Amino acid sequence: MADAGLLLELTAALLSAGVGIEAALARLSATVPGTEPLAGVQRALAAGASWEQATGMTAEYPQLRVFCDHLGFAYATGAPSARMLRAAARRVRSELRHEAEAEAEKLGVRMMLPLGMCFLPAFVLVGVVPVVASMLPDALGF
Image (tube, rainbow, N blue to C red; front, side, top):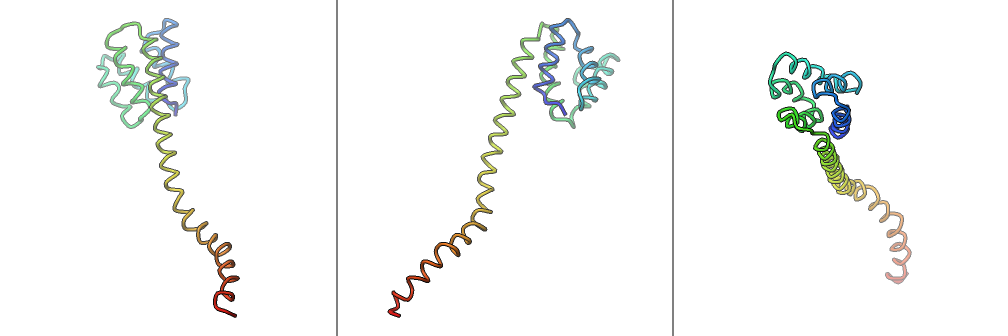
């Protein structure tokens, strides 16, 4: 599935080339893997549905939902929106990067359990027990 940032960049390029939003949706759905629901959005818009009704079928696809949310303003206003879509793509990518960093930080915490359960006992058995065992006869006077 393509991410929302990529789809926003591609749509901005299509709009800069003079393609309309509905035609851009059709082209994206035909060429980008995982964006097939956008064909249904395009057909619903061509049939006269509102933007909210047409994009309702993307609710189960989070990246397509984000894409449609950002594209909705451009569709409603008809304003030149390529620059706005590129800025939205940067913002979406930044949010994804922050989410990935947060998940990586959580992974560091979760990795402490195997460290504590496996490496710490092994260190005690290999490093501490032999030292204590070698000092035990001297300490007890044997």
